[in-house]
Image 1 (cartoon, rainbow, N blue to C red):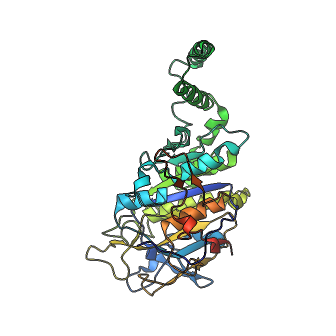
Image 2: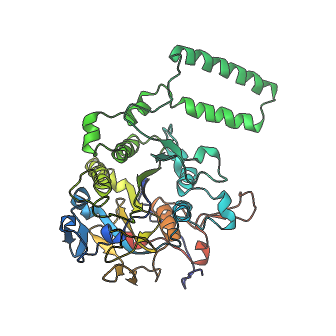
Image 3: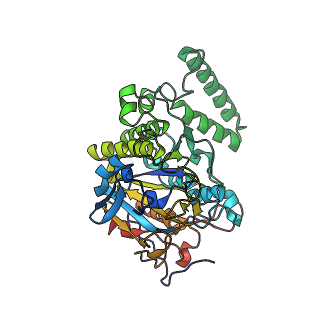
Length: 415
């Protein structure tokens, strides 16, 4: 059933962020071992449950994030609509039910951001939406392909496929020939709209080739790699920092880390605080260093970071496999862009099962649609926008049902 709020919706975006980094924790992390920590008899001492102004945090697995706690807020009153991986994964990335009618054409949140903000950078060379370390998931939907996620798995040796196999001289010669042919076709009046799109795509692609400024973003050495944990996720954090530092058109960056689908051995594997290579420690090393660097360079105040999976996990004592199963209650971490940190928003019961008080003006637990609205609001985008260019002619809502007051941003993050 749809949830409603009493008051009519009005849009006043907080407009605090220039960039967004979405850390997708694939598989559904245990909320009670991350952003809604519960210290019971089941919790290993090495997790080091530490209170920060009364907010319990797993310092043992998140030591670097703990150093950044002043900039971190944890929303603990969140409910997932589903506890099925693929449905949940898509739901949080398109901000709506993947099985609903318009969802077949629905773009990723990052594609909407690219559409709204991607061309506002004077020196726009890079795509508006960059997705690191994954090559599947929602795309640009019915929007123009230029707003598709630009997939990169960074290895530190520059941006791949930006060199011609026969050398730059051959590339320049063939590029000039193509321009001549395009000019002839255009002069003949026979260049169709598809040809225009192909030409525009080709020109934008060429800006990435033989470009030292682009290479610099995707190039880093072993020392830098080690600072971020020597992992694929750490590498993506380096590139996220560099993208924001460069300010060359990218506004939405997705980092992917998994799997948090921890049905067995949760404290001996992914949440092993004594193993720097455990999943939670990898997450902390990369993201903690990213936050530290952004803050030092004055960029964290312009960047909203949010971290979440598709759902939470069962609470309290572990299951028979010493792990946790799928569960609807979850928690989401926010940081940067003026978010008031060192606190939690929302109160759950002693086990983290039920939301006792969401502490939100919504008057209920937050949903994926509310988080979507929060992202748009943070970037200054009107989350009540309804586009009239969708192929079904039904009107595409940025946030479904938001105009009816059903969903709204979590502005408590800033107040």
